[in-house]
Length: 477
Image 1: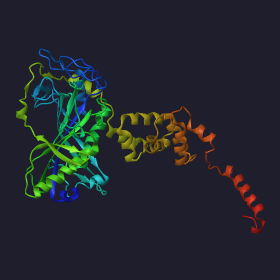
Image 2 (image 1 turned 90 degrees about the horizontal axis):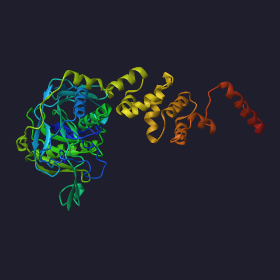
Image 3 (image 1 turned 90 degrees about the vertical axis):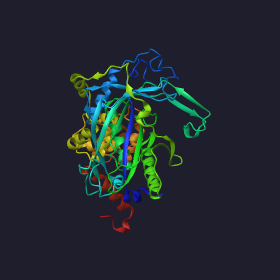
Image 4 (image 1 turned 60 degrees about the vertical axis):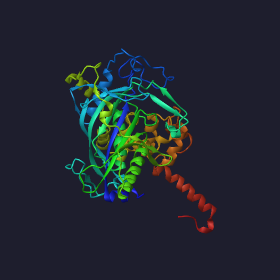
């Protein structure tokens, strides 16, 4: 197959994402009072509602609806005052009642957008002549270094319930194919889940990766989910099709299902773009289908032919009344939204003079940002950049430093009392303890000095000894 750069010279990739995020910070499930945790023994947190027993009636989780409204406001969505839940029918063991409760054509959150900043090697994936966004109107402005900002439209964010967890034993890479048996844990069934669907505005695998990364940062900052790709509380389906450059008609798309890492999302889309180009250039047909990414073999394989909306027999859920969100409810959600990563990054740059890359890295994770701001408390303003430098380049190497220890070592670095290598040595000594880095520096005699008056006697003594030891050299002077 051709490489990605070769393919994108002739073909335009059209990519859309469906990002599923469990609301892990809530105490109970979406429609019942079962504990919202997956850490207990299998099938411990179940009841007639999440097992779909006849006559069991669901009751919506108010906190979950507030969480999705927060997510919509943070991604510039319109909050729809009137919406309702539907039944999406399918027959598979991961949903005991044979339908999933989800939203219909109108979701709680509609028509939002996020601006995506792409730089470095990732920016090179998008050909330089692509200077218009997917909406055909908004310019994609490029900087001299090739970086650019692309507006990515969000179609909707809707609320639904997650399905049970299935474990296929004996199959290849955990798949049902050739499995000897399948185990089902209904603890996850009924977990509050929000699904964000983008418009097909992404044009490169790197843009898709960065979009999902930004979404993870946003939702973590909101405090609505831990967004763990490893445990599956955040996962992504990637849709991609190709069309010849200059064409406006969309090609046939394929869907990569349940991708659970940023790298896998990038690599699966890259492979699929190249595969589709090869099929089309050989006169073949790309079929609409769901495909699975195999990381070990670095390829996608067919899972099933894609279902259509008609296959799900969607209709309004008769057990759940329509929702009418009030202005007060929406404002209550808005007031809970903290400072978001982009705004925090800009504040760090404007108020503390941090480099953009450092500010962005610190602002991306709410726990890291809180640690950084605690380290800043009481520290002179001139030390802020040094604290940021320590946070970015030293702290990740250690497991249990305190903000006070970071501020202390940053102060020593700012005074040139220790070198960066010595700072690393000192932090290794205090990691996991309550020791003050400054005390360790003095204990080990590591403190450097720039005081000329303190250095002159030492220099004079060294010169005097050299003169006495080498009299034939005529002294040193």
